[in-house]
Image (cartoon, rainbow, N blue to C red; front, side):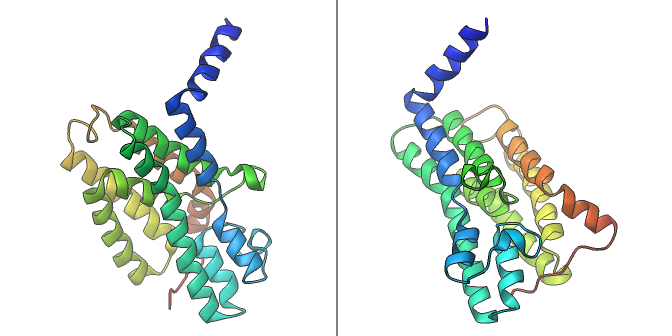
Length: 220
């Protein structure tokens, strides 16, 4: 029985679609924030601030050293983390992959970012990478969520809370716009899986929010 299961997984990952999943995981796992902060900013962000490798911690940590550089590297991290969520999906779509494969690629990209093999399976929160994935697959709900994130980030200046509110908004708007399932499918499961991963990675932030200890971040 176990041998059959392992053989099934092996056949999946050596298949045409499996190569996309592996590529999505590995590309999603590239820790751009860590690389940019360490080799351009001269700071190991895994040992500074929240220890997260995302754009918010890049900005927070480097702002103490060089505010202008912090803003540039934070924005670049945000862009690259979003791009790595989209790039394999775009290639697979060009090569004719079906919708279910595309959504699976998106899930693997987010997992790669959150549990990167390049940093002992520790990674970021998945927000920017998830945004890149979902902007490619369901652009209208994602743009709605982006607008909501921008508004709340400006008002409350707490990145994690703004991200969680935006995450909730993309789920709600997706169910409203696509009541019968995500485009090309009959289910919302891939979106819910991505949302669960992002929510799970935000548990420490949620605990700090409850205790009113979550720090604010100002992108200026």
